[in-house]
Structures are given as C-alpha cells and as structure tokens.
Amino acid sequence: MRKLFTLLVAVFAALFSAGRLAAQSPAPVTLIKAGRLLDPRTGNMLSPAAVLIQGDRIIKVGGPVQMQAQAPAGAKIIDLGSATLLPGLIDSHTHLLLDVIVPPEAEIKRTFNGEFEPGLLLAIAAMSPSERVLRGAQMAREDLESGFTTVRNLGHSGIDGDVALRNAINSGRVPGPRILASGRKLMSVGYLQSLNPAIAASIMQQEFLQVESPDQARHAVRKNSFYQVDLIKVAIGDDITQAEMTAIVDEAHRQRLKVAVHAFTPPDIQIAIDAGADSIEHGNGVTDEQLKMMRDKGVFFDFTPTFYDGFWTKIHETSVLSPAYRSALAARDDRTRQRAAALIQRVLKSGVKFTAGSDMCWYYPGKTRGEATATMFSALLKTGMPPLDIIRAVTTNAAEMLGWQDRVGAIESGKFADLVAVSGDPVADISELERVRFVMKDGQVIRNDFASP
Image 1 (cartoon, rainbow, N blue to C red):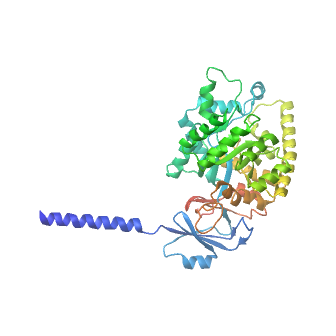
Image 2 (image 1 turned 135 degrees about the horizontal axis):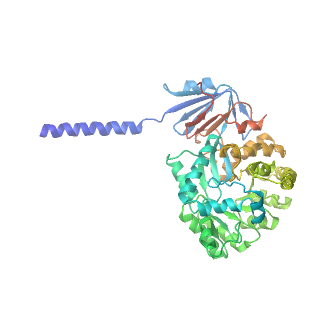
Image 3 (image 1 turned 60 degrees about the horizontal axis):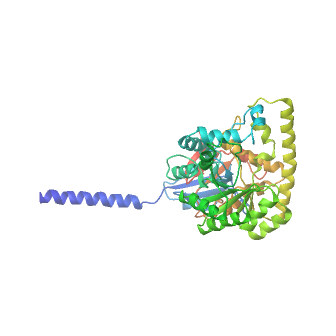
C-alpha cells in the first residue's frame, strides 16, 4: 500500500507539473505578410510589410525579412500577397439589436415617425429579449465579417441585450466585434408617440429610461450602470433641461462612463456641450461657434453618414410606392446630400475631432448588416471628405473617442491583433473598404479570401 501511495503521489506530481508547463507555454505566434500596411495616423504606407503577432496581441511591425528573422520556429505564416493591411474598422454608432423593415407607403403615412416607429415597436413588443439578442448575434457576426472589429452600440437593444451580447462575444460563445454597450437610451419623450395608455409605460421601460428631473436623471444612469454598461446614451429632442443633462453627465463621469448625446438642433447641441458630454451624435444643425467650443473642450463630433447619399430611397426598394412618394424620397435624398456636404466641410475646417458611425438599424435589401454598414464610406467620400480622413474616422480617431487608443485603432506593438486587408489601396479608392477580404480579431482569422483554395 505504501508503494502504491508513493506511486500515485509521483503520478499526480508529474501531471501537475505538466499542467503548469502547459499553462506557462508561450502563446502561438503568427506572422502576416502583405504588400502594404497603412498607418492611418500619419498616412504613411509601409511596403512590403509584415506583422508579428503572439496570442491576441501585436508584437512588432516591420519589413517581411526582418519580421521573419524574429519569428520563432513553427510560427504560422499568413501571406496576403499584394494586399493592403489596415487596423480593424470601428463603427462608433450602431444598433445591432434592431433591423427595421420599412413598411408600405400607406402605413408610413398613417403613423408618427412611420418609417421607423412600426419596426421599433415590433422589436419591443413582438420579440422576446432572447430573440432580439439572437438577432443581434447575427448582425454582429455580419459586421465582423465585413471588417468591423469594434462597435459602439448606442441603444435600441432592450434593457440589457447589448450587454448580454457583448459578454457572449467576449467569452467566445458567439463571434462578433468588441462591443461597447450603452443599455437603455435616456430620454424624455422620445420616438414613440400616441401609444395605447394601458401599455405605454411597460413598452417604454423595455427600451428607454425616462428623465424628468435631475434626480431621475442620476437614477437612470445608475440603473444602466447596474447592468454594467460601457457608456451612457442620451437622446435630446428639445425636451431635456440643462439641469437634467448636467446631472446625467456628472453622474456618468463619476462612474467613469462616457456620454454620447443624440442631438440635431443648435439648442440641444448647446445643452450637451455645456453639460460636458463626450460626443455629439448626428449634430446636423451644429453652428460654427459650437464647433469651436467642441474643439476647445475636446468634444467629439460623430458623423452618421449612411444617410448622406440616397439611403432613404434604397431601403424603400422592397416597398410598394406611388410615383409621387418615390419622387419625394428622391428630393429628400438630394437635400440631404447638399446639407451633408456643407456640414462635412464646416467640421473639417473647424479642427474639431470627428469620427463616423453608420447608425445602422435598417434592413437593407440585398446586403448583410456588415455590407450595409460599409456603405457609409462611399457616402462620406461623395460629401467631399478625403479618403485618409475617412479611414482615420473609423480607426485612430474612433479609438480615441472610445478611450481605447491603447487597445485598438492602429497596427502597433501592444495593441490587440485586430486587422483587415483589402486588395487595392483604400487611400486611392475608399470603396475598397466595402470589399474587405481578410479579417483578424484577437489574433484569430475570421475571414481570408486571399487563401489558396
């Protein structure tokens, strides 16, 4: 028995030592080679280029010969040929748990906010929280496959749907981008009007946190914080007071949460600026003086350019429309193009820090969610934004706005190994970002269309 006991102790000790050695073994190393690598911050292009990756982090960037010499024996090599490498793309304004199908013309005309509200109500009232999260998981995967390795989800996801999806992605249960989740949107009246009084309160509380006093504003931030959100989203529509907005920002910052504010008109934008918000979303009516204030205070301007180039007409393609309504949509698209071009030029001239988010929550006929999200690149180009500025808006600038510049937004030592590759030069042709052919997140290949069959 004593010999048997001694033998068992020796076996367990050997197994324990082997386990410790396995746990201490270095993470696998991957070497990626490509024809070019773009540094969005400087605009410099390294050619040819190679990236050395260990586990989920970038170790070093340099020439292929130099990096190959530093790679350990047995390192995995991914050769992308003449492709161009960029940092993983960041969509700083999206709605992964919402996929609105535009209703027929007659329904649009009879309902308040008729293009959007019916789809939102269906998501809230006709879908269970589980179904919404599963729908969001599909959208998240499609975004990732199109090169969006990080997104900021700004509301319309139920009480904690985007938090649950974020956690599932982080734990590896489902594929998707890194998500900054905002939980329920804070607002006063909001998008939903003329609801059945018997059920209005229960519908609203599933999607929004209402603010009607400074104390209630602080309480709303704490409610979202309870669900472990990453930031606070507020919608202002001439209905939130300065005192309420200031209370929201003060409470959020006290809990180390940034505040993103949906605001269109100059008075609403001013309330957000004066309260110390971190970003203005949409901001179509911003004045030159407000842009100067934002620049001086470090407030980011987050463009939502998807709608800048005929988007309204495109998402109505599955609807039956009268000639008059189709003409009205085309006229609205033309007005939007003109206003967007003027807005872009004023923001560029102002020196304010800016980013770009798709604001995608729509069913786009014939496209995956990721493909629909990527339409914002050509929309920005047509307004006159230079391609390099577009790329910065969804990489280095966006990373800074998120407070994640130490993790994402550039292909640099120490950052997460989030990379995308396209066939051509996106600085010469921004539409290359609509045709991403290689995606890596956390050092794991998500998509590689360059691989030999």
